[in-house]
Image: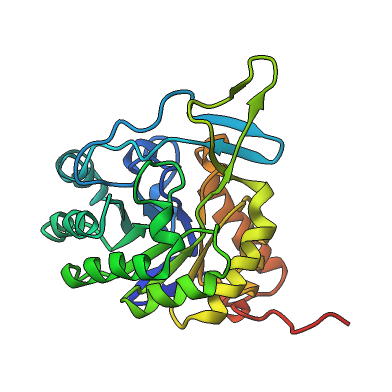
Length: 305
């Protein structure tokens, strides 16, 4: 059985990737799970300077997932390089740096700092965070702005560039093509969906921000459609992200065109979720006689009879 996948030039032992913002900087989970069993790890988003993020509380559960407004709190790229990256280098799993900026120049500057160090396999450009005051979702909903960010990073990066897209667009294919044409090597589809959770007794939001991003089980059917549409629009690999909790979820994403997946919200309930899902995927492929997971990619039949 072969669970290995290729994301451009990057080889992953399996398609299960820990999603940015749900797995800290990776190293914090070392005592809770086997990091070497993961296909890859995408670290918490990195900005040029440290960011305090959104006011508490930052998370609230929903009937089929959660709403978060963390606001990209992070230690900044320099402290990541000096404090987090050295320990990550001892693991086999490829490390992907999620990158954020207030403008295209800041994205490129963060990448430039990371280019000077070893231990990273690729960058994921977060052009789609809905929980910050500037940048974020504006880049991800405008094809020209998306291309501007990707182009700026492409000029300074020798490593692969993944581009994390927003689901909150009229036509994700347009944004996907803009990111691909500007130099994106893969696309992550998709970020969270703007949402609210209100306590009518207090007349207040259940999180510190009025709104946050909805993730988890509830979004999977919507994101499956977006992955399908994005994969038809581009030639680069698409990484599915949304509501993945089982091996069956992964195979469904593959059938609609994904080349790998990221696991996010499940990590909050179970720090060992990614490894558990890898094991579940192995058992499922064995029971279904799937010898190579890549055979399922894009295998969706055109119509039901």
